[in-house]
Structure formats: structure tokens, C-alpha cells
Amino acid sequence: MSKIVILGAGISGHVAAAHLRRKLSKEHEVLVVSPNSNYQWIPSNIWVGIGRMKSDQILFPLPPLYKKKNINFKQALVTTFHPEGDAETESAFVKIKYVNGQQKGNTENVTYDYLINATGPKLAFDMTEGLNPGTNKAYSVCTYSHAEHAWHALDDLIQQMKQGKKAKILIGTGHAKSTCQGAAFEYILNVEQELRRHNVRDQAEVIWIANEYQLGDFGMDGVLLSYGDNIMKSSEMVEMIFEDRGIKWILGAGVNKIEDGIAHYETLDGEYKSETYDFAMLIPAFSGHGFKAFDKNNEDITEKLFKGFMLVDADYTPKPYEEWSVQDWPETYQNPSYNNIFAPGIAFAPPHAISKPRVSKNGTSISPAPPRTGMPSGITAKLVADNIIDIINGKKDLHHKGSLGNMGAACIASAGYGMTKGSGVSITTYPIVPDYNKYPNTQGRKLGKTFGEIGLAGHWLKFALHYAFIYKAKMKPFWWLIPE
Image 1: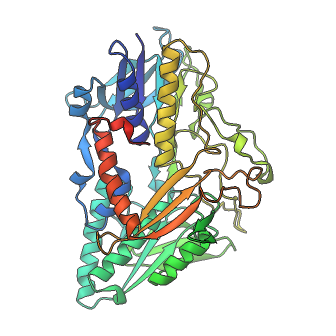
Image 2: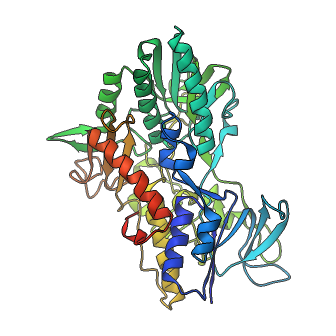
Image 3: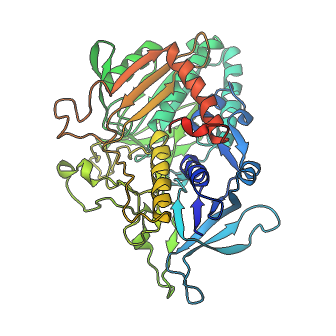
């Protein structure tokens, strides 16, 4: 019998748990540890943030589902890692702290045979002074509760605009190293359409602010894509979309301080500027959780497991940007020091950025961190689960591999909610990390597999995927037929 412990119940953790439980016999234990007892379909937070969906439409409680599916669950957070055990036990374990129920505040050592770290990122609002959701007129859509709060504030502003108030709305990234520009991009397009729906668009100035060097960078250094019969840069496509909707933009901006209705930022030229606003939604920096790890003698071995996020089978050798390669990226998401520990999704430490790093004249790094959300999180989680299953069944080598350098990703960004007037921006990228050796003339991506579309059909597909992936997450009949 093997015991697999999964830390986190987001996209990666939940996908891994589902596949492990489906494919392993009941003699093997699957245990999920998560501080949140709800599963949320994060891509639909955008619609909660504009009042078009309620939180209960994008989430469901995990304990009843896990009990039904024979997956054990502890509502707790991990505090320390002990991959060699300690003086009392040779069994590897993690120390957890319960956050709910009668055991709240109690700690426990949870042993494991295999560990999947799917804790994702810490939403590091504290890395930007004053960026705290719901204060200083700044909000977030990173969680369903954040998104609900954002909608209440936006709705209040819309009502004021209906009474004649002129307003400025600022949406984008709230730190010089933020990632997840795609979520902010979706939100600004949806907010802009909601303003139109409420007949107050002419009362608002809508501004995009981002650490991107160019529009459409998305932390992937932009893409060259097929757009109908044309070939277009993602920067050109996003510029076309923004100009069509009257959205202004500020680029190369490292937001460093938020005051009441004022965002302070540094530019790549080294200038310090500020932008006033009546409502802002700014994506924070993502960071590791600051976990510590100890060996059997209680000596600190954090550097064996973590470099901010968890170390995996990547090439972390420091090298100039010109020497970065798709070969640097991990394929199995296995920790090099402890081969029974894995980290799919956002939990693994990337070897380097994907976008070209840029530094201001003052020495401040202002450029997006690499994205690992959504589709890549699900794919890497299934890959890790399948490798653990193979090991349990006696296979020695890890046969399931998938690098972001040979993996594609489809992203459908909502550009406005509505079955007849909605819109979506569909972008498919292959590979996620550009391969300039294979595709030297198309900016490292394969045309035909890298394309963009805009229109109502994109909204229908995004809407259909919302229900499909919640169906999948609830592990309903034949859920595994729905791809990651």
C-alpha cells in the first residue's frame, strides 16, 4: 500500500487527486491537504467580478465529494517539510496546521510515500505597499471572495456614474514582476462592456497599466499568430482590441505603492509617476509560500527543495538571456534531491522568465514572470499522477513527460459576457516557451497551432467550458474524457 499526499486543492492538486483515485486500487491512500474546503473554477472569477455570476456558480464544497470518491481530506495548511523524517521516525512527513473545526490550531505530522506539492502561489499583495484587496479603492479577482468584493465596488461606482459622476478605472498588474496578465486583460474587457451595458461608457476613462514591454506579452514574450488569413503579432491584436474599445494603456510600469485612489509606479526610463483612479483591479505579485524544510537531524535543507517555489528537474544554472533554451524547462516536475516529491502547476520554480527581462535605469526589474496557470497546471498534474501510478506499479523510469517547451496551451479570454452580445478572444500557443531552433522564422512558435480569433463564438466556448470543467471537477460520469 502507498500513501500519496497532495498539498493544495486548486486545479493541479484536484486534477492529480482525481486521476490517482480513478486509476489506483482502494488499498492505496490518496490524501488532500488544503486550507480551503471549496473548489473554485478560477477562470470564471472574472464574471463574478462584473456581477454576471454568483460565487456559488463557480465553486462547490470538496469534503462531500472526496468522501464519496474515497479521497481523504484535511482542511489544513502545510508548515514545514521533512523529506527524511526525524529522530523519532524515518518516514517522510509534512507538518500541517488545521485551520477549521475542532482541531483548529492543532498541528499534525502527516507521513507520505509520495508527495505532490500543488500549493500554487502566495498572492503577495504585501510586496506592493498599500495593495490590499478592498482598500485604497483597489480590488482583486484572484479569488471568488475578492471578485465579489470588486463587483460591489464597481457596481457602486456605476450607480454614481448614472448620476453624472466622471470616473477613471485602472486595471492591470500591481507589481513590477506580476504575472497573470491574462486575467487582468479579461477583466478590463468585461468591465468596459459592462459600462456600455449600463449606458455609462462615455462617463469613464478606462486605462490598462502593466509591466509588459509591449501589449500582448502575457509573460510569454508575445506571440506571432495566425489571424484569419493574416499573420499578426499579439501586440497588434491587443492594440486593435483596445483601440476599438477606447482603452488607453501604460506599459513598462512597475507599480510600487498604492494610496487612496493613486497608483505610484516606476517606468523603464527610470521615471517615477502616478495615476489617479476611482476604481482599480491590480494583479499582485505571485511568490512562493516561504516553506522551510529540515533533514532527519533537524538541519535546515530548504535550499534542496525550494528556490522561492519548489525545485524540480529544470536547469537552474544562471546564464545570459541569449543562452536560455527550451531544454532548461522541466519535463517530470520531480524534485532532484527527493525523487518521491513532485511539484506541478504554479508550485514549481521556473528556470527563468519567458519574456525578455528588462531593468529600469534605476536597476528595478520590470517584466512579467512566466505564466503557469490554467491548462498547463492541469496537464502537468495529470502527468505527475500518471508517473506516480507507474512507479507504484513497478516501473522504474518516468515515462510521462511534458515540458512547457513542447506543450501547447489554449486560452479563451472573455471579452464581454452575453449569449448574443458577448465576445471572447481565443489564443492558442504552441509551444508555450518559444523554441527558436525549431521555429526560427516565427518567433519560436508554430503557425497554425498558434492562432487568434475574436468574436461571439469565443464567448460561447468560454461559457461551455465553464460548465464542462465544473462537471469534470465534480468527477461526474466519464469526467476523464474531458481533456485538461
